[in-house]
Amino acid sequence: MNRKSLRIVLYSMLLAFILFGGYVSAAGNLLVNPSFEEVDEYGEPIGWEMYSASPMLASASITNEVAIDGKSSLLCSINYALAGTKEAVLMQDVPVKKNKVYKIGFKFRKENFKETGPYITINIRDIDGKNIEFAEPLTMVDHNKIDDPNLEWDDMGFRVVLRDRESEVGEGEWVDNWVMIKTNEDTAFIHLAIGIKVKRPNGTGKIYFDNIYIEEVQ
Image 1 (cartoon, rainbow, N blue to C red):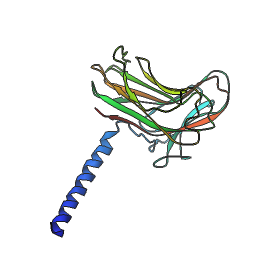
Image 2: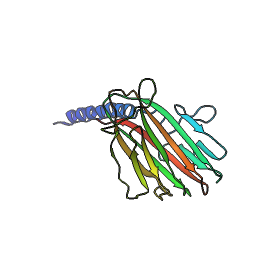
Image 3: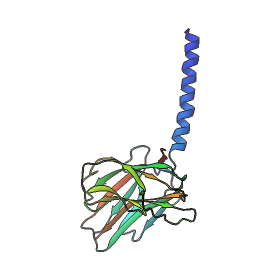
Image 4: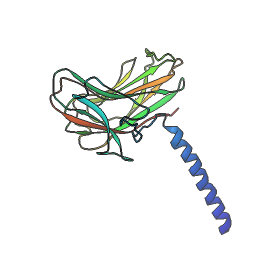
């Protein structure tokens, strides 16, 4: 093969990689604003619904303190250790296909957070936005394995939940976590809620989230 032919082949391969890679990158993640880089005039992340019952006690906000890619991440913090349930979450409804397998993942990092958390729930919903209750088979297909009995995924039939019972996983470092679920014939949306939910906190602390994704894998 002469040099000219080789350049043509290499150029064609590069062009195909760019086009195909760009398509996969753009279309692979179904979430809107998955790394919280886009915010509105009030500093709230575009594409997400933010909820906090008592923002002064437990808050969710977009921060530039730490990030994996880009400049932003989601910060959820317990600001005062008072009695009661403290909750601060972001939510998004993602249109998905029926009878498909989806991988849902994210990275999180704790800073002096000794409470139960992070709080992640995944609900499968129908076209009317109602939760679908699974019997057999259940929703969860697979999940990543972290060697800590205090951090595990739980398939409750009507939702999949990540339960963190005061584990030290993620303290001072970014940790990857993911779960795979299967939709059914009635599925129209995946409802994702991510943040913190703590009952009777003993102290304050922070959790950061970044690089969240929902991808069709099968």
